[in-house]
Image (tube, rainbow, N blue to C red; front, side):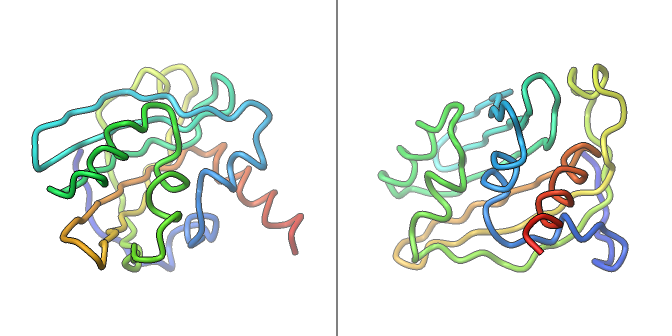
Length: 160
């Protein structure tokens, strides 16, 4: 994946939310699913690539990379399969801190879902999570499909 950092003023407001993206999409979706695409485990670096979907419709392509030798964190991460990274690992511990987003413009390798569904948004975000009690870091890249942005905007409008 090639990317360049862009200014936050050029990205949709829907990409700037700080909470769990999975929770927002799950509440707006009729058939929310997390479809694992690829998992690579090579200590001390672990990578997971998924598509967040509403049924067969892709919403967000996400790739996370964990740098850790902490056994419990590695076991939790490697055991995620189709579960939410945020709900199971990132937002369930107070000792995990998230950096401010870096917004990106990117080109992704061709993903089967992209071909089926049409356009993938070429903007995304990168955030870094660090554990305060041990030396673990996770980098998360999320690239949004147009449908995800519509769903997030609709959910935010209903909450206002």
